[in-house]
Length: 371
Image (tube, rainbow, N blue to C red; front, side, top):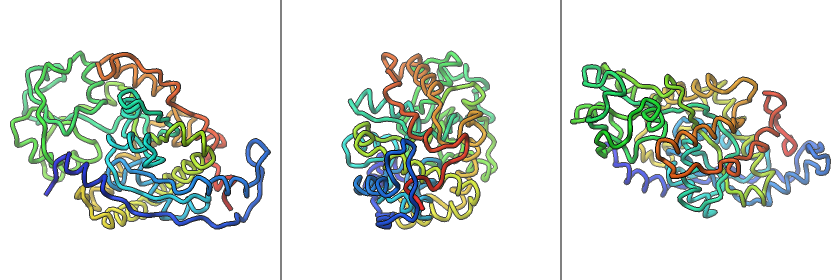
């Protein structure tokens, strides 16, 4: 039933569905923006001048931070209120950076800041993080309960099944535990069925805490989960990004896209059933190439939204960037060999976009372009 990772990538990149309609020509409210120099009418015109903003998702229209919030913002009309014309396109996170860098899409959310940085380093891209929902990792490592691995230090000499690559958070966790990549075998797996995978000749399986553990629990399969959170691994997920050029040309459009998405995130916290229903409507309309299910998406949102709310640093609103934490993430990835030399991440982060959307930890809504 499941496609291979490569086939899934091809299918997801082929998806494109038009979403939000153009906003009303005249906003109902007038109010100075933060610099006191522009009116709401000016801001609305500036947002409309950005044209169609194509957002490409990280994994179909799954109920995940960085995806469901954008889906909800479109469905609930939040982009319309910001005078934005937004098109939603299903995608696959590793390939989204090049699409945004090439101008084929304008907004996306990376599965980690490290992933976005890697796109910049290896693709000579100009991607900039403008928001951060997840301040921890969403991945973990599963081993059979009766297997040979009791501690991470037991991994050398074993076989790890991977889907595409070993997730960055797992690489960092192993590095902190003193386990070097290359001391264990890695085999490429097909599909996303953890039950079938653990029946193969493998000793460990990287998973999303919001996906495979739920399937294993439902099947009554015992396992041990090594969670990077327990190892204090600096990590991230649901990182909004755009290109530096698009941000420079259309700053208010980027700001109000993020504002609407964060409003969608809060809606999803307040009414998770309605939010997941919005997501699954999109999933079905796209043909469901990733074979997602309504029940599993509800589980995914429950786990991942809790990771956001539980790990957002004190004093920050949802979506605000912890630049120091992101720098630590990249420093550790450099230490474990993902990067040959530590990249300069300061130029890849713009905290001002999302910081300007908050009054303390309260999102300013509807904002200067809204009603």
